[in-house]
Length: 491
Ligand SMILES: Cc1cc2nc3c(=O)[nH]c(=O)nc-3n(C[C@H](O)[C@H](O)[C@H](O)COP(=O)(O)OP(=O)(O)OC[C@H]3O[C@@H](n4cnc5c(N)ncnc54)[C@H](O)[C@@H]3O)c2cc1C
Image (tube, rainbow, N blue to C red):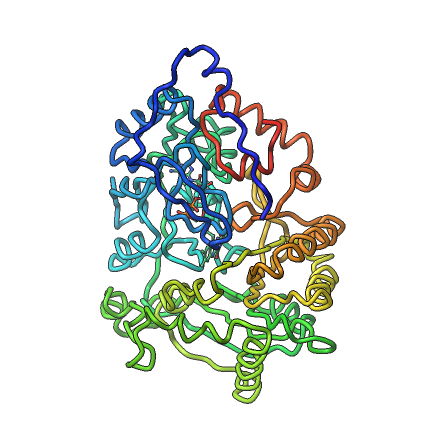
């Protein structure tokens, strides 16, 4: 959303060079934020080996350009963009390097997607310990953002399940990091949004499962208080809990919505685990109601992407939920986790202006009041959001953490030429509420964070520590992105 000032990268390195190498224009491509709000031209490279990746770093130095990393490009804003510089698309580095079906330990290249990962381990009775709302994310991009799932309150972020990784530094040297070796880099590169080095391999622990199905329960909640009570009563006895909030409901119904919770089946509960764990019993299915191809559902969603349309859908959904009471059923893992993947390109329903997401993380003591203020303010400003997701979290020990012992509220806002400026103002007002409540922000979802807000929630000491590590791992500032220049402009 903010104007990005591209500062000349590698100023120091460039000063020592007479004529920088020109990069071939056939590598110039448009690179977009996932939400579609910004796009820019970059020189895109797609190495397949660590050696080829090193070559790109050398080329970047010769050309005086910086290097931004990109996995699946699922960060909503500019985290995987590097305007007028080099973007390394890591997706072709996607080999499984080692798999032990006895222990559930896997070593893989960073371009392996979550979809490729679960498909690889499932039939051996394992599942990724942390699953994001889309399975198109890569493991490198997930580690760089330290992503979480609907079990964040229990399993923590993905970093808690990473045992070790190899990190290629800007010099081309590769170091191995774990909780024991290079522990400071380990705790900062996870969640370090690609600024300290490039993950070239990751070793992770998978989660043992005894069925391809989850026990799922869904029910409607009448307002935010009821939502919080449900989380309080159920997180202790559930493997996953998530709330889908109707952000258009006001008054006594503020924060109303549906909650979904799920549990793994214990050993022996599924009579046919070999069947339910088969890949073909997990897929989302090609058609809606057996007729409408999933690939075109977004077209039918378009007319719904207005206040009236969303109000209508939410009302219907909530009434149905209230009337049918608590529903219990068994569902394949994939259907529970990747609901958003069910409609490929669903973001296109938001129209040509795209969408931004705003996801604050707020301690449990202040979350209720803060979320009430946030939802009411969005309504008063005439800028309600159309998809709003409530999750419970716990703190972690990673340097740039966004996590709190509390809740997050992820809100998708449609962007149009008419509301763009008003949305920017709104997010500034929301920032004040979040900071006053002791909240934090998440780079993976961000498009609007300003340096002073990042400084306020991260603190000077943490930022200084991150800069120190950045200087050690990347002294010439070779690794950069638009997000880095926007949020840490003095770097
Ligand atoms: C529909 C949808 C649902 C989502 N649901 C969730 C959710 O439930 N929970 C959650 O936490 N997030 C969620 N996200 C956000 C998403 O998980 C994160 O943005 C994640 O980082 C995306 O992974 P990616 O491979 O697409 O990475 P990208 O977006 O391409 O990159 C993310 C960051 O990783 C860096 N990077 C990429 N590869 C490497 C590498 N090899 N080494 C070092 N740095 C690297 C990039 O520079 C960038 O800073 C969702 C996003 C979408 C679109």
